[in-house]
Length: 72
Image 1: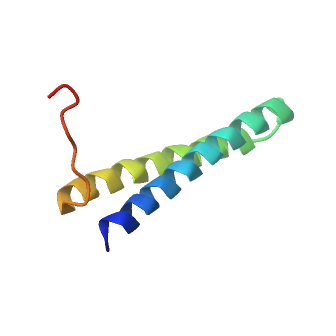
Image 2: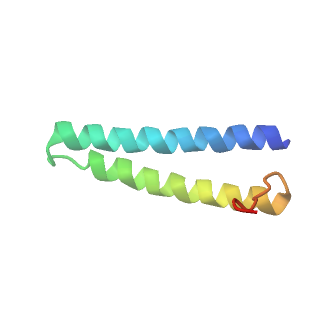
């Protein structure tokens, strides 16, 4: 896997996380707490966020991502 492809995958997962967050907001506003769709969307968001963190750690470990010091 190339570093560019890995970064594209990271951005795609991040966009799916944002989509699920927006979906949860929409369900919360329209369902008025009468269904479990909001909780399910937030559960998916948490799972995808954990996947995103794991992918970032794998990218750093594999050398595809290079963290840097902001002030240095």
